[in-house]
Image (cartoon, helix red, strand yellow):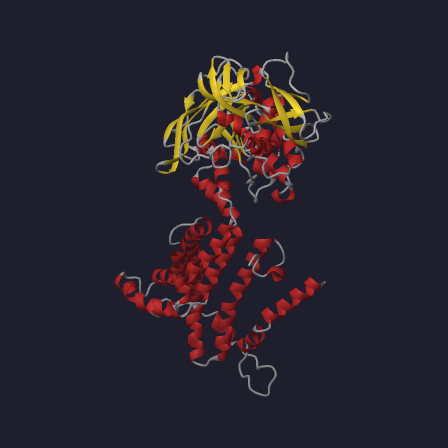
Length: 378
Length: 261
């Protein structure tokens, strides 16, 4: 097997799927997943991510586009012969079979001998941490155990691509965390190319090598999790991850003219009108009036609100010109409403992104940054 | 303990009506004030008659065929009703149930002409077809309930694991709705088993099932014959219910009766 990341295991090109003519659910998706990596397909409910997954599995026929697994197109291959494994939201175990027979179901479909099936099923159950359960019946297991059996059942055929459709969303938070770790361990051990559908941004960040953010039937941005915080590709991607501060203005090279005067920003922005985004945890807030000789991009601010979050505090501050920003400060910092403060926007953390043209019917962006900040920490 | 009492009561309730039948079946002379009848072998001999044996076989054949066909047709309709919402679903539901609401006789009288025209009258095939009218609605209802509890995604799960349409049906769907299938087949069998008027109308007297013999015996006021025939009619369904309820739940038949129902 080739080392992870060196080759493409799954490639989707120009995929379009419409349940009703003229209303595509998947609207021109391009997605490349490197071999051996785990990609989270992240998006709000109804964005088309499950539809995309079903098309890859062959359960839905796309209206246009291409799907390649490994070296060739799989569009002509029916679902029962595609080299994919699929785990649904629910375990969907076959109630009349034992746990072992559930895991071995795919091997039985391939016509393998019972002895081989038993041995492979036992191996898989051990892999997911459920040895000795092969003879149990489906109803005797907990939800988390059932989902692990479903994972073993999908892995037993040694698929080239493992597809997971919000597999842990019906488990409670504590168990979900442990299941994510288990999945990550197994995925690394087998070096299996995996696509993990989720609507939970924290889950995606925790589990994935790369995140493909899907909005309104399109891939909005695709990159490593950290990039969504440090270098968001689009304004909508930055907003989906929440909490970001937005300052409208005009960019010229690395100089951004806005209501706060001229700010320095990181390179790579497109000249012209845009929105400066900077995450609250990148801001440096000091409780004292801005003094001459302060670092670049330091602006005076008045503290409007403080919220204690346990591991940190969220400080909302009014900027000159009426805008507000949210900054994250250490939990022990003494800061009170009405304090004069100096807020520095480190240029490397400031990115100017083009304003979105809002297509009709698209959700309007939140205009009040405080709402955004509340959402991000909720 | 309470369960034992309950099943005992149920068994008594089910079997008590059979006692007078049993007495009449072996009766020769049975007049007031005699408590027990004078024994006679006539009832037993009558039951062993080739005509009764033929009628038993005809009844078994027709009821089995009706059960099988009704389950295939009704399960198909029930799947659509149980799993999907579609335009006109309520209308389809009503139309499916209509034969169970409208007296079957009225329906049959209306379509008897077609049975004659297509050569189905006076034949076993015709009787099987006409008995689908009262059975398919019940099967559809039972199967709609069974399919409503089914997660169709399980079929997709099986498909991704390499199961084609036939194996998905046989290895995933049928086992998942099996209790419903058993109950529906049992219903269809029992309805067909005791059907008299449709058999007479379409069979024209040439298709002789057990109920036809029974009605003839009652009509001629031959009580020992009627009692003996009644026992022959009553026993197969009892055996069938006992077998299937065991199949449905794995527990003793008296406790669970109709299994899930």
